[in-house]
Amino acid sequence: SQQGEEDPQALSIQEGENATMNCSYKTSINNLQWYRQNSGRGLVHLILIRSNEREKHSGRLRVTLDTSKKSSSLLITASRAADTASYFCATAYTHNYGQNFVFGPGTRLSVLP
Amino acid sequence: DAGVIQSPRHEVTEMGQEVTLRCKPISGHNSLFWYRQTMMRGLELLIYFNNNVPIDDSGMPEDRFSAKMPNASFSTLKIQPSEPRDSAVYFCASSPPTGFGGYGYTFGSGTRLTVV
Image (tube, rainbow over all chains, first blue to last red; front, side):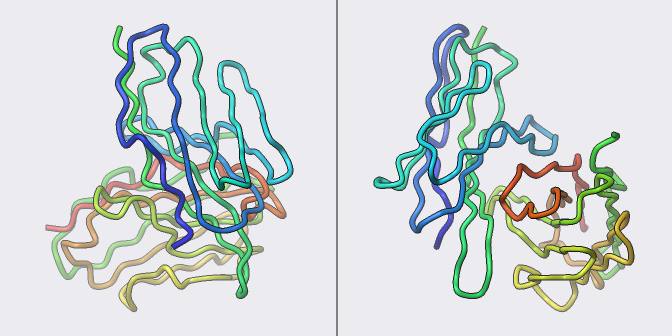
């Protein structure tokens, strides 16, 4: 399937450390997006990176995209306890019958104080 | 803007009953999406609308599920009859024009459905 796969499934770090999550996908994409979901809440859009871009920054977030390896990474620098959440990558792609937008299973990040 | 508004936040119903979930997208967004989230299957796209027209409903699990968007500001997802395996969190999301993956989606807070 086209579904993106994040790894690791779960990550536990100390406050102040950097957190890196990876996402791999299978076919060509139009763009890739990262979302955060706090427990019991909806998903919040963090950042979108287009297929012709290699890196984007937003505050403490840094996203890279390597289309040759069909992978992306999300780096959260100087993590805080409030960053504890699940993080999902989602890929937008075009197929023979139209377009699709698929979420991966997510990475559960725990930032310990 | 109040964001994407879903109701109810929680719904507990007995097997066999009809359930209706509601969504109000962000004004000006012309794409609307219904997702279902479970621990086992993650986030699944059920159906999406563009300009109130259903574009792809291939994710709708069965004929028991139906969705409508009578106007740009309102959509419903109905399950009739409901079954315990329908228990999940149902999210509605909307995005601006040309938003199919072209822009970030704005999600509602979800409806947690429990069918007993």
